Length: 145
Image 1 (cartoon, one colour):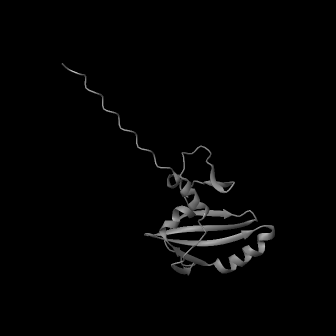
Image 2 (tube, one colour):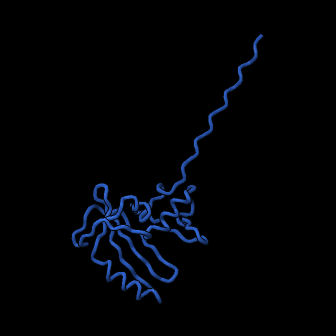
Image 3 (tube, rainbow, N blue to C red):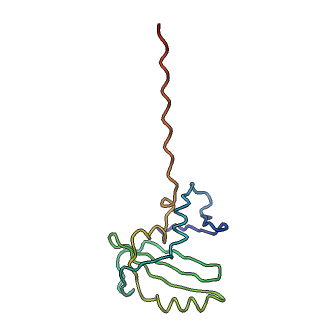
């Protein structure tokens, strides 16, 4: 997205940002959103990919341990996002990838705009909120007699 690539890998059950390695503290729940980006997709509308809508936002590639990769190409039109999906696979995932490609290729799907940061996140989308600085304790006034 915007010429920048973020690379995530699984660290046990959790998703971790591995590139860039030097990054600020990230919110766990925002990383969880990225790891679940392809879950529970609700298509609000569909149109032929030959008639794209909006401007290209970015591309997210989601790879599974068994060799399946799903690429999501995200477009933004006003407040809506439209996504095209492509699948590829190696070894035992080739048949699954072919079946998905047959169903998904040639179409763009309108999704809820909140899915944009899960499908094509930017580093700023994932940062943990900074804790506000603690207010200085008031100095006690000197005692007078």
